[in-house]
Length: 360
Ligand code: ATP
Ligand code: MG
Image 1 (cartoon, rainbow, N blue to C red):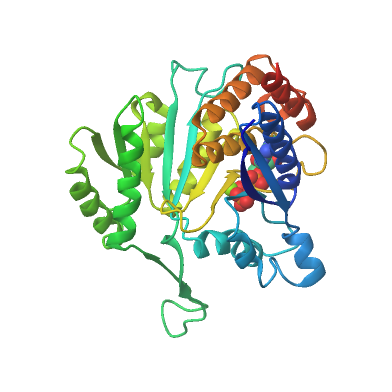
Image 2: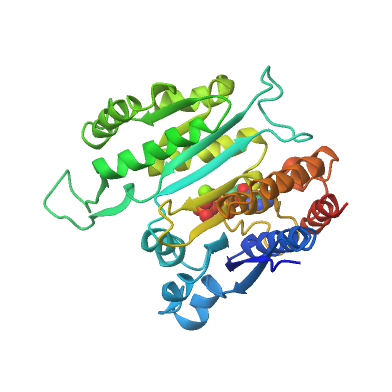
C-alpha cells in the first residue's frame, strides 16, 4: 500500500457551539479518512485559543500563534465570541487576525436546499436555491478605518467616523475569483452587489472594475444589483442567482439571509481562502458561538461539516467532498435534524448519522 497523503490541520474550536461542531466535524473527517482505503489521512493539532483562553491569559491567541499556524495545510475553525468579552477583542483578536495576516481575501459561502429541510421559501413556489456568495474578505467596510471622539464636528456629542476601503486590486481579484467560480457551475452567471447609488466613491469604483473584468468573461452572464434590491431578489427569485459577489459588509448580511432561506444558519458553510496558497486557508461554519444553545448538545453540525467538504475541495479531493455532501443530504433526507431545522436530534445523533452514511 502506498503511503497515505497526510494533511496537517490546525483545529481552533474557540467558543460556545464552536467546540461542539468542530468535534463533530473532526469525527466525520476521521471516519472519511478511515474509509478511504488509506488514500489520505488527517494529522490534527488542536489549539485552545478563544474567549476562555483570553480569560485565563489575557490573550486571544499566543504571541507565536500565527507563526505556528503557518505550518499547517489548513485551519478548521469553530466560532469566536462570548458575552463576557467585547467583540472588538474576541473577533479582531483571533478570527479577523488570522484572515488578515494570512491574506484570506476570498470568503465563499455556498447556499442550497437540503432534502428534508423546510425552508421558508419552499412554502412558496421555489424549487431551486443553489448559489455561492463570494465575499470580499480583506477590505471594504471592515477595513477598520475611522475614529471616535472627533470633537468639533456635527450637531454635538461624540462623533465617530467609519470608513470603507476599496482598492482596484482588491475588487478585481475577488471578481475574477467569482467569474472563475461561475465557469465551474451549471449556471454561468455572476451578480455583483453594491449600494453605488448612495455610496459614490468605493462602490462606484467597484461597479467600474466589475464592468471591466466582465469583458474578459464573455461566456458568463452578469448583472449589477443594489443590495436592497438583491435582498428582495434572494427571497423572490432565488432561482435566478448562481454566484453573488459583494463587499465585506454586504456579503456578510446577504449570506446570513441566504442561509436562513435555506433553512437555518446552522447549515451554512464557508471558506476563507488565500487563493495564492501562500498561507493556510481557514474553513468555518458561518454561524457564531450561539451562547443561547451552547453546551447543550443542540448545535447543528452541518455548517461545520459542509465547511470540511470545502476544505477537502481545497486539498484537491473533490470526490471526497462530494461523498461528504452526499452523507449530509442522506442524513437530512432521513429526517435526522437538529432543533433549528425543526427536528429533535442532538449534535451527536447527526454526527453518528453522517458517519453511518460514510462507512456503509
Ligand atoms: P456572530 O456575530 O459570531 O456571527 P451572531 O450574533 O450572528 O454571531 P450566532 O451565534 O450565529 O449569532 O447565533 C444566531 C442564532 O442562530 C442563535 O439563535 C443561535 O442559537 C442560532 N444558531 C447559530 N448556530 C447554530 C447551530 N450550529 N445550530 C443551531 N442553531 C444555531
Ligand atoms: Mg452573525
